[in-house]
Image (cartoon, rainbow, N blue to C red; front, side, top):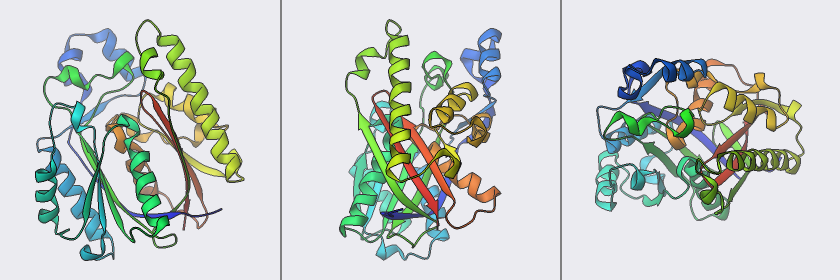
Length: 310
């Protein structure tokens, strides 16, 4: 398979773990709580520090885990939904962050429009910069948190509970990291925004599933892979039934999905797939060439990534 960039030093920082039955909207709603628990939810992560502090902690872990010198990092990709989450991060905040972690020569670039699929947009931008020679080393940091009342942690249709967290990694030339990025595909369908309502809930869900089915099959075919070649499938952390359905739409059996973090912290918005990859890597012995498929989605954006172990 062709390799376009490498991925290494994945590290993350989560908020404090808390049981979901402590959330205001679930304390006295035992029926809804039972729905969440049956779907696999148990804990969420609530940060006692700021979004920037979450970023700094994750970045410092990544810098400690990599052999890439700070002055050799050309670009920092800041990936976040902050514009829609009740807080605002501006260039002054990012410059303070760069100074704090010692990345004095890096160019900051912000990515936010793809919501829960921001991570694939960030990886696509970073990998393109590596492949084109515009950068040798890119640090990507993805961070999101919920501010204000507990109600904001509720995803639509009881899909999951939002958690606070940040994840960061280094992108560099193929062969330099723990994993190589072999292929990415990313699509945005503007009309899905119009369907994302209670009135068109069924139509929205059906079209989303069809898109995920199509792009996952297409990326496997493009890389001359079959479901048998895939060691694990990583998705965002929603519910066990939803995630198993996503995995089966790729042609893989449901047992190839990674579901551990649905119970552990739920949905950290865009950062889930990298956190899940990190945790699987940490707990398992991987062989060179082991291949992984990741799926991401938001209201209108859907994407897929093929990684392989170096």
